[in-house]
Length: 232
Ligand SMILES: [Zn+2]
Ligand SMILES: [Zn+2]
Image (cartoon, rainbow, N blue to C red; front, side, top):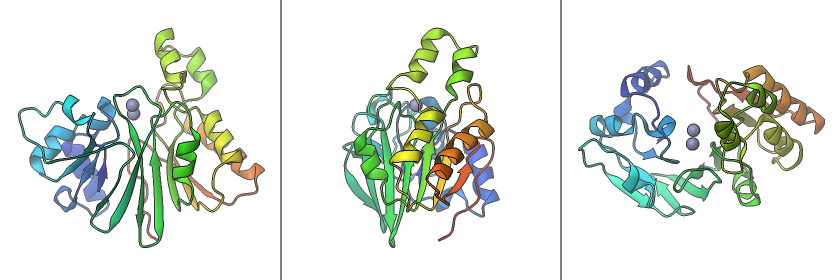
């Protein structure tokens, strides 16, 4: 399953090949929201590999399909559905898109949580992430770097707003207090190239985990290369 398709078909194929996979072995695409870093390669991918695309009812009509007719599987944000033997929960996230969602995946007693692009972490999302064995969570920006950086003020405000993106500090606060300690691995993702530094994001999260004495494995996702392949 592919969650979002922000990369070009070529780049995605290359990265899949690097982990021993290929595009036509993908059974479904799931879309979180319509921002271009999440769908830039979608129409092209769907043309080359006509798999079902799971997308919310409100997001589907606003995507440019470049003249092709995609195999859409629209769902209501908040719905539960299955792809093969994987059970998926979708949940609404606070972000400035039409109908953005995060996902959790369950199969064979294993749960994976995946949420990026959110301005804060409401209780409903904390609930959905509980019990995850592996969690991919946005740690988008360092507030100080964002404030002092070159983005126009309106953009800075948008990023910092409750419909923007998670700061390292918000993630640290979540890890220090409400994060489920039974989660074995946390991957910090969707780091801003301009307003963050991987080592700052890592430090803030690690300090939060250390404060609770948690031995959670902490990893950082890069937009330049795939993470390791996780096997359970
Ligand atoms: Zn977004
Ligand atoms: Zn994004």
